[in-house]
Image (cartoon, rainbow, N blue to C red; front, side, top):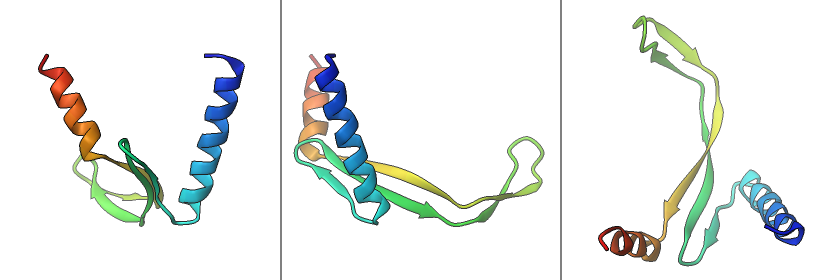
Length: 79
């Protein structure tokens, strides 16, 4: 990639981060939708010991692919 491409991608990433930080979702037509979801503090069993452990709050970014993208990937996968 050229330096211009990196600058464009960096600016796009920053804009998407700002939008999701405000609680909105980012939709890219024919690609998909991204949203940030806050996960509250919760208790889960430790997979190794089975003891309960406290999981701190976190934020996860969820991506839902557009139906068009899924169809294109499936059609190319079967070629």
